[in-house]
Length: 102
Image (cartoon, rainbow, N blue to C red; front, side, top):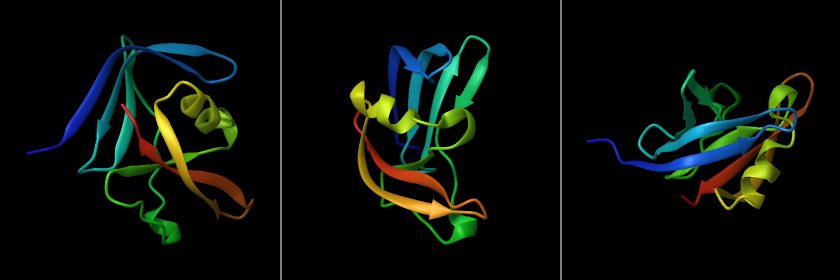
């Protein structure tokens, strides 16, 4: 059985757009997804190919491209708490491991 935590009526600020829906955290699969009327918006990222695995219950959130600054906004809204940062890829991009606090 999957351990899913969900918070309804959430608005997530992406910096240039705000999306509303249900924020869903799946601890078993280590995902964080915003379920909107238009479909899922994945907030977490899998960094296994870079050798990074989040602690149980945590997820990674990328902080580049369309998600730049997303971790800070999610933390300010009280949805996550930063645990550590990692640098990945050819462009030395930053991702954050976060504890989901729904």
